Length: 520
Image 1 (tube, rainbow, N blue to C red):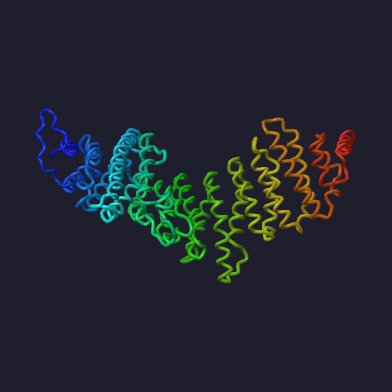
Image 2 (cartoon, helix red, strand yellow):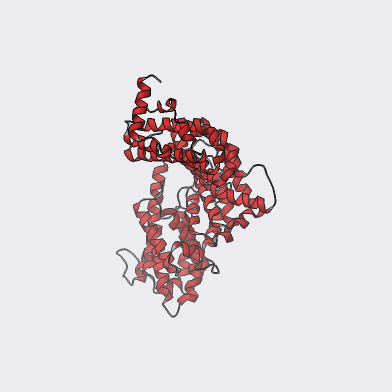
């Protein structure tokens, strides 16, 4: 019997013109689905409209006919075949984009919308079957367990805007995921994946079992959606559940981060960061896992791409305490720590860096490293001083992110290494005053709020320098330094007055003008 005729038979409709009337006995659902599986299987060329007719068949069928006597394995194979039919086009590992990629992706989006419609009808029937006395949970439960994994992967593949999705396929995927979570009796995607409590096993293990064969070194790039499904799913599983799956999620995260493409590196580093935040330190240190992650991240510091450097530095800041705690517990006294190694390399790169995007990333994260080292920052003072002086001197655009970050770094450094500041007072004082003058004379696009933040940051640095040097800032306030600001505004003068405490704004301006007029 043709699929269209079977649909009409289930709907109790008569045959169309030219068609033979359907036999009185409708074939069992298992027989029909077994025939459809190979036809829809990945790699085959299904007849036009087969998927659409299958959706109509599921919608029209009675629950008893559809699920009564149906093997969960049969329906699972059909769902897997449909999932493969809707998947994005396969591509060779590390191969260039094939010709006609856009049209192939557009066709995949249309197939996904049709397959998603079939899945929606199927889940609706399963929900209805739960309430029927002849079926109920004993029949529906095993079927749901078999189909939830593939349906979830389908939804995760198409729920976010990708080259292989369109508005229709995304809408179907969102509706399907919501219905899937409801069918599982859960309140959210996270609960669906991890379980309602720590003792209940969720569906994350089943999902990772399906993804495992596609997340190997030789296959993970063949399906362009696999890495996105993994990286979209992973953040939903948090502490304390994630530690149970560490062996499953850490290798693919390292694999993706070790790619040559920046997009994949960032994706992998973000997955590693989530693992570091949500797995206990003891589990990370077991079998030297933390060291493996550290070396993988450290190698990325040689990159020249700002988004990647930012992701790596943020990840390292959360990993370093775990490594150092493990070293202390093992009584491994070392002259330098991993934090020292990272900061030394970062400062080396900062000294020679000329790209504004990278300078901003480095400057934003530098205060955290100073806070992390505390008094031990004295090991790096010589190089850190050169970086601070160089970054204070250069304007980096309207938002002045680099200068603001460096001012915060200087404040942290003074707070932690204040005994070493008096000998550096003349150099730092000169750099701060020069920067304040640059800010005052800047008539470009820098917003007034940003200028005020720079002046405030510099003022706080001067206050800290004055306190840790026992008032030496006042002694160092000589005509040579005052000449750096020939005509300060009232606001700048107030900032300069704040740490010194002995010159009013008007006296300060008069003093500077006098030095200019006399050629001092």
